[in-house]
Image (cartoon, rainbow, N blue to C red):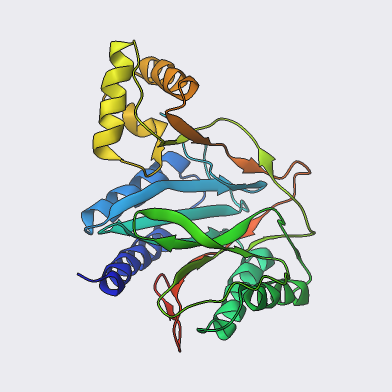
Length: 292
């Protein structure tokens, strides 16, 4: 299939899984069962995972992935950001939504900011114009943004590509082109804030294979190459085939050798609660929101 059809198929799978999640989510569920359900459904519907399902709570903006046998549960009133990536023929549909058991003005503002961006996305429009629309919408709702997180392009075999799409007003002269795929991704908070790296790190990506001494590390490296290629993976996935201790030791050795990139959870150090919304959009007139 061509790139447009691949994006659209990935988007259909993404929409279906998100709809199923919205029906199932309830306080008391573990983050592990939520992530495992979403990942299994993506595969069952004919997609591949572009990255592990992120289950980030409250002041954690992104990149929290359940650990092996993670007991953490969703509580009433939590802001749970679910970020899913679906890959079809290498083309990625990247999208996210925020669940809360009660109505959340922050989550609503994040969704409204994406709608404002879609209104201006057309071939020939600059990234700066899109950023202006996002920030204006969030400001009108009375909220701020996580200023060091942005949207981004996606492309074949690339879950993050050019252009960068800031959520704050900028003068970026980068021009959107027909057929370009971009992920619009506002992170909304009560006031402007930033995020910093936190722990535990559970997401990794293979940069390049390297020689390693430990037999277990060689076996785990081979599994990573065969199963995930250059896309991010969860440490937890490897624990289905190897002991958690051996996985930890192998990843530590591979990271020290420069074979792996890590993606720590991103947390607001002031404790602000954060909502996220994200859609992947094909630039056109009109634009196509493939995950919406």
